[in-house]
Amino acid sequence: GQQVQQSPASLVLQEGENAELQCNFSTSLNSMQWFYQRPGGSLVSLFYNPSGTKHSGRLTSTTVIKERRSSLHISSSQTTDSGTYLCALEHPSNTNKVVFGTGTRLQVLP
Amino acid sequence: AQTIHQWPVAEIKAVGSPLSLGCTIKGKSSPNLYWYWQATGGTLQQLFYSITVGQVESVVQLNLSASRPKDDQFILSTEKLLLSHSGFYLCAWRPRDNQDTQYFGPGTRLLVL
Image (cartoon, rainbow over all chains, first blue to last red; front, side, top):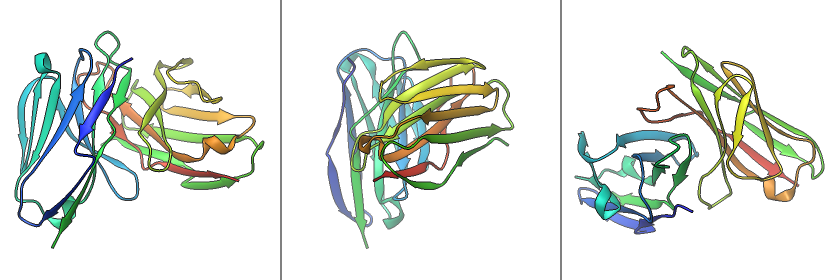
């Protein structure tokens, strides 16, 4: 089945540093989504990105389907960015089937 | 604006007891609905999805069942809980055309003892 690996598994930054989170997948996909999981567990959607690059404030998502990877760049990190970042991909032939990555736990220190 | 509500917020149940978790979406007609489960420290796993009332597709078998009795309601249940059912359950909705992200509810934390 579809496998989704995220790297790094965890990351510690000083406030103001940038972060690059990676998501690699084993087969083709229909689209990639990025989520932020709050410490309490709820998920916030960051990007729905079938391909190419999208920007939202300090966040940038880039999906390159033929290379089977997607990245999330966080610039000028803040302590409030701390939490877990998840990528999720849609099955290419059934967009209702979604596989989540293993997650990157980010801690931003003051 | 659309809102998604899950109930209960948290539950402690005994092994072998029944379970029913609910999810309601307001402000959006005919959404696609999803159930996910996450063990403590684990990866989020999709359990079920539904694209219309009365129709539910299973993605992962965990001795759970799901039903969609109304357009805006998705129910997750089992007659006999296992210890392995402990974790965090999330419900999500998405517009019918699937050309957008999923929107998640606040989740239900379940502890089976």
